[in-house]
Image (cartoon, rainbow, N blue to C red):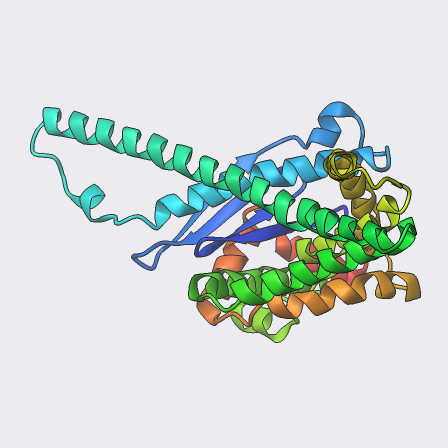
Length: 320
């Protein structure tokens, strides 16, 4: 068995877990049952033969993660709907056809609503975390002509806004449950990678922090953006804002290489790179319960033979 890295994300009352050639969605339904769906896929980097091209592979990996993440988030929301009507049997074929049509129309309407909301959220995120700091820091040109001071101030403002945003949303009850599932996702992966059997009790014993977390990626994005924007020297506000938008793929690609290195190595450099992201995970992950650990285990075992993986970890017998 080859050693592979799996990862995922928390969704509504569940977890998405992505393996080498498939991803799973494990959701705790309102009736208490766990529903698991598995989807086969071929990564963008494999399709485009770019897996060995630095920066480019990071951009494609980010697009792929966004695509899968949005799809599984929408799917998880469907399980949160009231299932009472679907449990009732139609009295006639006509009524059944009408209900199926109504259900289809409702699903399409829900998907359109969610997609629209997510698009607006993405626009909001770019405006809040990229454009607003650039606009505010640009005002400093009234008191200084040093580009590095303005750009450094922009980076610090961006980090401050990000931290404040995370702190505020972490107080919301629904978001807190999602953060608990986020913790369950990390614990399940850490449990398997440590060579322990995936049982709810074992999963809860492990740390809820992980170096390859998307939260760490976002923090590294903040750090890399400071360095990249240092090379953009302009006090023309529209050029400054445009450069922030155009350089997002570049920043994302470089950040991916950072997180890839930190996740694959255990040395002083990787620990330094990982430290800020691990600290932020204290906000974006919460301690899960046994029921959430069960959902995480279902998500993992749907995309990988964890028993064989754990055996290889114990014997250190992975193929090269």
